[in-house]
Length: 236
Image (cartoon, rainbow, N blue to C red):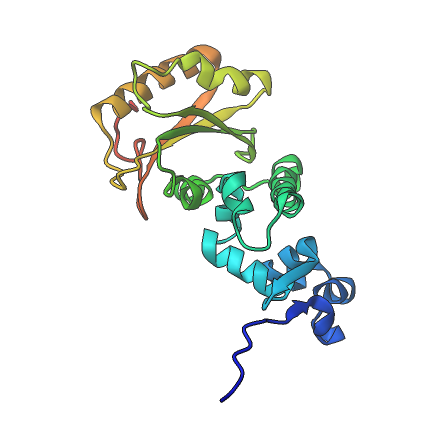
């Protein structure tokens, strides 16, 4: 009868051929040539029994739905994954956040918003998965490039709870030329409510007083979004 051996070997990046090791590939080909799993593997350095670091990276990406999913996952949830301790979780979170900040800080790298679809593409992947309503404000420069994305409200986004002045606080402080407001409907249905229209009207009035253009208000749903400006809701 065959012996039942349940032990599993530990796989390391050094078990891979030199040409397949992420660090060597990065040195030879540049970081842009590496997959997301390989980049995460460089942060992890080692794997776990049965998985090398690249495979652990692939598992994390599948579990959380890509880099954006890892970015928005609570720290404790990332920490709960097999092979991810406090140091590794912190390194992954820090690296993703640095990449996000680099995009926003480098003018030539900032995404430009030329249509409601551009703004939705920037926000939808993350916001459609949120379990609570969030209201975010895109701060734009004179060329409609994104300066920053500010997360202002979590919970019910209603005219009774939103203080319109807070929506413009960062825009005024950072001398933004325009803003786009967006919030999500956790139900998945992006149909604007009467409260959404009322909030939009109040924001537009405040923008005129502060000389900050309000370009749009988007409602993000599951796989769908609505531009209140395109529908003429709250915009005159």
